[in-house]
Image 1 (cartoon, rainbow, N blue to C red):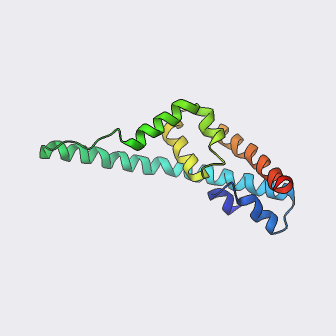
Image 2 (cartoon, rainbow, N blue to C red):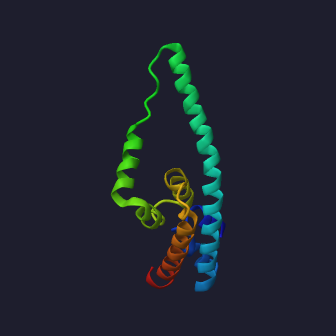
Image 3 (cartoon, rainbow, N blue to C red):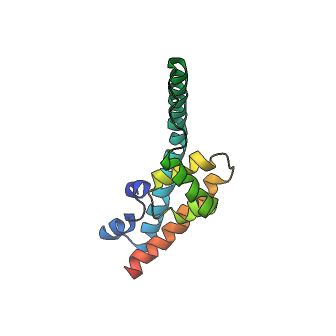
Length: 142
């Protein structure tokens, strides 16, 4: 369950390696994924607030010193905007979950979609759906 909180894609083989059944692995993936989603989603807001305060302080100091303020729209920001505009809300939530880890998924969703009231239920549904898909796939396909 703990490995599902962090690296979701490869947690099912660990469960099967310990001899657990399909439904036990599914339940472990689901509960671990939910735990990781809650922990990283709500803790990321705290860290994003601290990062924003740091950025504002650097901007204020740059203006006081008469230097150019740091760029806000970096290459990484441009890439993130392109991904968001290409695959959208449900694409980020449903498609990226098995590709990137749950902590990164939760942080991205908190940053870009935290204002949506449905983000937590949609994330939990996505984790449950992918838990079922991965449990069955690792049991019968791989």
